[in-house]
Amino acid sequence: MRTNVYLLSYAPLISILLFSTSLAIATTELALHWLDQVGVYDELLQLLTARDTKLVVWMGFLIVYFMIFSSLKLLSDTINQLGFAFFIKEQEGTTLSMLRPGSILLLVGGCVSFAFMTSFLHVGIVLFVSFFIYFIFYTVQISKMTTAAGAIGLIIFSFLAWGVLLAGLSWVGLTLFNSFGEAILFPS
Image (cartoon, rainbow, N blue to C red; front, side, top):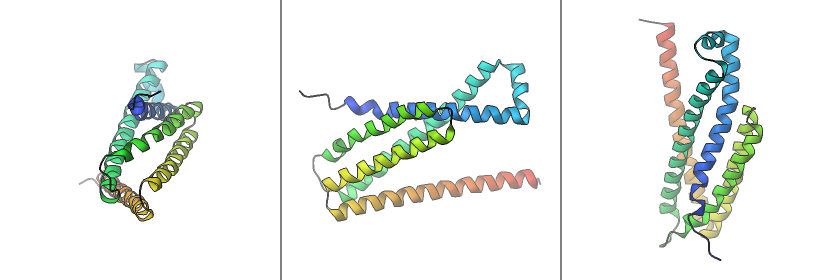
């Protein structure tokens, strides 16, 4: 019996939604606790009910996490396919279809993250373990499709691309943080 080849095409979106929701719930708990400690939560309760405040904070974090994971997915696909162009020699594009079942691993991880949605640390651990298991799956699949040199080149290329991207983002973040701190501490 043949199945539809596009059956797994929604797994990345559902995974992103599941992880975003779990992290948003965990972050909402932390944020509301912090707002209560600094005394802002009581002021918010004068504007909104406790339920509405929690919902607004949760929606804000859900949107932020969804945007982060979606952009990481887009960058991941771009880096992956650019690496394929450099290191995998094929004419038909079967490599991408062989990697598609790996999205089920992240989908399962997203479902497991719901068991720990009240703990930011535990959801983060589930996310890291899911990525690590997917990386192992990715490495095994790539090693089946190309030579050892091609697989090593593709993995090194991916690590370098992500390293440069994260270093650049860190530099921009630290520069912005430094300029905000300077503007607040030493106004002109």
